Length: 625
Ligand code: G6P
Image (cartoon, rainbow, N blue to C red; front, top):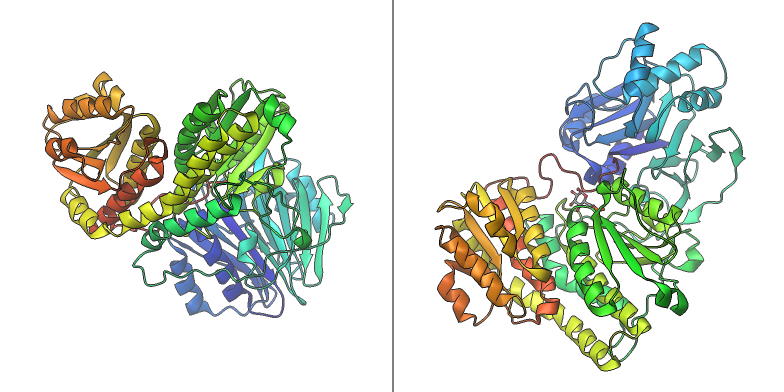
């Protein structure tokens, strides 16, 4: 789970690698490093911690090499330190490897190589690859064959970048169940795990398919399958609009992204819903078909296929899982089909009951989360229709499903997801109405009324954001808590989970979300006067019962905070602090109830001096299972 980059061409490689790595820091920031070939010698520079540490190191070294590979790490095997940072080199110091993924049989390979006299310096699984290539090289053969022989011995999923001192004119890149792109410029080539990282230099890109190796030179790229057969593939043209990373006057990206929510909701809604009187149209493209970039766009299920569905399975992780929990309730309510939502990593090793009448949906902001992709692939292999909901039309997810709903959020820089969560929710509302209309489970009037309500949400979010000073004042009162409990029922149980996740991620305060009715079945034992309980209390079917559950917490002297609608007198009487939002229909409330909770976590994190945009131990996109 890491980011890989590479460069060869007329420019100094180190600054180019650094600028590519800056675009990939979301994949991990435990350490970073580069390997360049400087005056015929392989030279590795790496540093634990944020990319800025590597930047400072490079500023003291001034490498002028024209070829190199780089890496940003999210630690899986071995603590984050300089030694475990990539690139890893072989014992002769002539081969360097950067790796994303996990080599499952590394211990066995390592033992074997140690017995053959190879000396290891790190605790990583990745180092074994450098030594293995070195060993295979000692047996003779062309570099391409040597690498292919080495790959045959690796078990696991991986993407690699490889340079060798003996071949300063090329980089080898390997993709086995990940994403890797080669950018082609004028007499220069680039390598990156995410094509976004090469967009600043070129819009001509060749994507590696699964189980392919690329031999990259300044003049282009040659692709081969793992059995050595050459594959011809033309470059695709990417959207060439610049990738802008700017806080636009906000103190943090997170604050900016929370404030972008009205805009992303409007963009996502209007993309698929031109007017409340019109049907939702998912056939609209996310990429210009002329651009021939190979990714799916739109939803292509026929009316007959939609009518024939008898089950929906949703797979997601983290914040996307919480959005999917809301999606389940909406789909069951409006479409009347049973929906199962699974944490994607829980699918492994389990019997997945899907068939030709199942729609399997993967929800992933990045479209790269390994667990989510694996679950969707398994459902696909069993004959299910597949669909993705993602913010990245150019992601791995887009390549494995023909049906794609793309949220219009722009890049989300902050590691904690905010704007992409509300956009995923909006996508589920649209999808539920779309399927319900197609299957005739809601009337045209009801559909029109719901579309109008959806269109009013962005303005409500704006109204909540306008209250952020009040929310800040309330939030800071609870910043000294060590444990916080969030409760909600029905559609707002996922809100409680997401609220707790945001607080944990951003402030490192231990927080748990519970179904309000479940509090009494155990979690209530943790409550006392030191534990704030945050209740999401929306008028509607579960109002009274949620209020009773909150009373149970109050009776244990917990500090009581509530997200309630304006004018809720009962809430004002029962709770110590009220985070009020404009009145909203219960069915749509998850779209707004989360906003004060995002702000609460943001203000507490900032007040405590935490790293708001890059919280410790996290990565935005986790590409290992
Ligand atoms: C990581 C991130 C979470 C995110 C989850 C799923 O764990 O830290 O914020 O929700 O991955 O990411 P995805 O890109 O699949 O939505």
